[in-house]
Image (cartoon, rainbow, N blue to C red; front, side):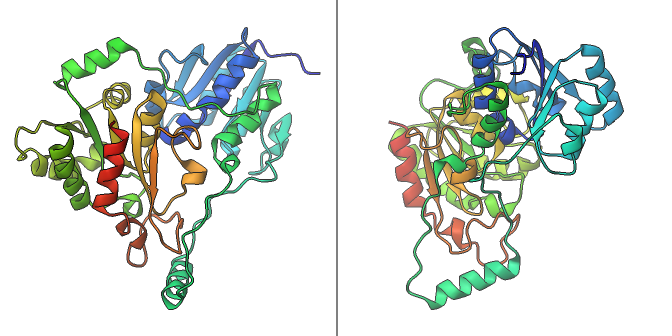
Length: 370
């Protein structure tokens, strides 16, 4: 039986949503290794997720252009006795091998098994995301249009969710594989500070996250976000907080301009104006967030805010927010025979997202806000 590590490096993943989905595994590791010093190696852009997180003792970051040898030198000097490599890439395996960490655990494959001391086989029931080709999408749509027998797809098993990939790896260090809800820690004083900084007034706050960095196939139309917000204003007497990154500035400005004209409406456009840490706190300040499938969607669920999530080209079963099946969140899927296609742009008529009606989304947000 292997000795429990005293100084454990966890090599984190590279995207916001994926990072949030690793938190159940980190919490299980803390449970299994209460006395270990756990250091998370993460891209600098994600450092704002981790202050105050109960599973992590220390965060080490690397810059976007920092070379692998520079990272490895810093790791070697830290004297880790084990490394858990969460991403499935050759580079991350090479990092810990070059660092001379004696015990190196990660998934087999990606030409890196020889760099690991424990190459963990993939679970037999794993379902990987596969992009459909545009030709395949067109064929499936054409077949469905010719047939009256098409029915929306059935839900996949919850155990296929990506949080189970990371839990399976953590189990190699004695952690339980049973799921927990993803968790990002946000303190009350951080919420108060972000409310004061951005003048988020009292009352019911509804977040709107209409962008999606991955591509337009994940974006519900902006005019439908606007129509939903107008209806919600009348029903709930709410104010709105618009979220997004710098690339979403024009889209966010379009929403803000349409909503600020509503009677007595308060609209705060935060797109491109917050740090990642402030984003966490601002999402927590909302009662409900209406969102496409994005990184901020995962953050909102992990800080404890209710969601209405809109899915078309991606899979609720594989990468839905929060704990699979969490009743606090309402996840709406468009009906299309080609979904999920995992493409950045729709090669046909965007029927998956267009099938999500304004009325259906209004009812979902109203229910979640109760």
